Image (cartoon, rainbow over all chains, first blue to last red; front, side, top):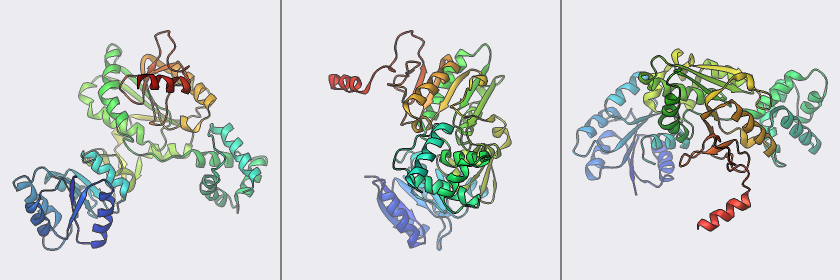
Length: 121
Length: 292
């Protein structure tokens, strides 16, 4: 079973995302900030990361840069999922190694489309 | 809405657009036509029907037809037909047209423009191979309202997120807050025209590639056969027809034959032999059983 790490400081968003992604037959883990997400990746590298941008302690952008520099950190498909909905943020994310980008608010169809786009489902 | 009102609307929509409503689509009528009724200052569907029956209701008739035939669309819908376009149809059509360096593509149910713009984006991505080529994309739809939206090329954040890879969004759209507009150079690649598929469309000329997806499903058998035969007359002998995932020519017409291993893709039947059009479902089932 594929694994997905949902990284968001909102427990409500994590819960909604978990429900959607479990529907795609993924095992889902959660982290509430970038630092905790890095710890989770050190323990087990996921197949996918659904990643918020603005979080306390370490934001999603910093997390992504650290992740891509880690051993094995190039492999997870990273899909940003954020309210930072402007081209400048999208360009920065892609440059840092994001594979796809969801602009909040989102629904199941959008997550499904993006996961399909990067070959996760 | 009384049963008589429902029957009137079913007949009205079938005649005007070919739309075939089964006996149980009252909810669809209510959800789509109540806003039209309210906009016209009418309280209920029954009032709308009474107004449609009265003289001088053409404008309302158009609004009712458009409200019932407008369907959801998104960029690169179903993905596979666009892979076929890029990897199979476009190279073959280009080889065929190498001398004229001219291609014509028809999106027969263009709706709000996502399908023709998806094709235009793929053509733009292949621009280095198309230097010196003249490529026309004609998008037609019954509804003037959706064509206006298509021409504007303006989409909500929600609309651009389903099917459109993020790199293409950034590359081919201009952002204004939550609104995304497809860039002028992509918009300029598509011409839109109002067209009812039930009427004569021979004046459109001939096409190398025809996309006619998710519209035949709303027609009855005779209308499907008629539309497919008339599309065949407009498709060049080695051209392509793309139908929706739930649509087929099998059992309907010999004018097209399925392209092996390319689901949803058809070519004009130039063999002079019967295609699969005359094969009925019982024979297909028997053949499947024999193979098993």
